[in-house]
Image (tube, rainbow, N blue to C red; front, side, top):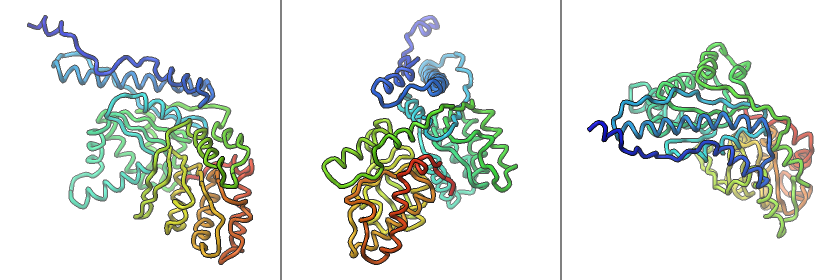
Amino acid sequence: MLKKIFQRKIPQQFPDLTGLLEKQYYDQVAQQHIQFDNAQFLALQHLQILLDHLLDTVNYGQKSATYKLFSVPPEKCQSLYLYGDVGRGKSMLMTLFYETCPIEQKKRIHFTMFMLDVHAFIHKWRQHNNTDAVSALAKKTRSSALLLCVDEFHVTDIADAMILKRLFTQLFKLGVLVVITSNRHPDDLYQGGLQREQFLGFTKLLQEESKIIELVTKEDYRLMHLCSLKTTYYFPLDTQSGSFVQRTYNELTHCSALKTGILSLLGRQLMLSSVHEDIALGTFDELCVQPLGSADYKLIAHKFSTLIISEIPKLSAERHNQAKRFMTLIDALYEYKVKVVCTAEVPPQELYAEGEGAFEFRRTVSRLIEMQSEAYLQSKHINDL
């Protein structure tokens, strides 16, 4: 009987994906969506190892559940922490990895949204339960995700740091594999923060459980795309302006499909035409017709390093409220050094020349012009709230 059991053909749930990430990368290069970069390619090898292990783990679980065989499970694999300067391709590599991974138990999320979800869960849990909310969140996460990808990881608050240490300790114990991208090495997270010594336990945990990979490339590819544009402020609104927006979005997102983004802002919801990682595309109406304020715009400026604003009209005196919101939006984007690409009906100087607040609007005109300069484009996005 045992002989017959062992002679059964055990089906593989997933095909052999060895080297598939490499192929996907070469396809992107061939289609001129990206340029070949040796440092990116080396980092990709580490992601391939993680992908291979992840599939071995899932296949082992499927076999064991089906045949109850006493086989040796795959050895524990380290998670991955990928860091480097902005525009080096970290998020692009994570996208290739995540989209190639065929398992359903996976989740990808931007760090800001991740922390909002964490706090929301903890708040709701404590309203109805007396047990540990962080442990409950870890179990809930594991029930739906064997792989967790967190993009743009950073820490600015000691309370968040303490929650993260406990949460990730539980996630690692439960066998969740984590892929993180960040601009900083774990040792450099939360620099200068209050009670930083309490945070060191979390950085130690990350380095024990994760393989730390620095993505060292000479080029800032996002800056190259922006600087290659003949202008970042396109006017007038003609038959070519829509193509300009689409072409710019394609270059900045490696030809990702347009995907509507819904942001929760201080109890309100804002719908944007498309969101891809830290790149956003929104119309003037989406951003400035709704009753948004300074705090809303600062959250947008914190979340996105580049914002494409389309269809900015010439504003009349009757639309002074929209002009005021546009002023507030540009102030927030300027403060956080967000890169801005626009299409507009008229040049900046003619956007709002008459009406309430027209004198103050001159500052917005000045900033729109400065935002097109190479010095501004080379400035670093400030994403600390």
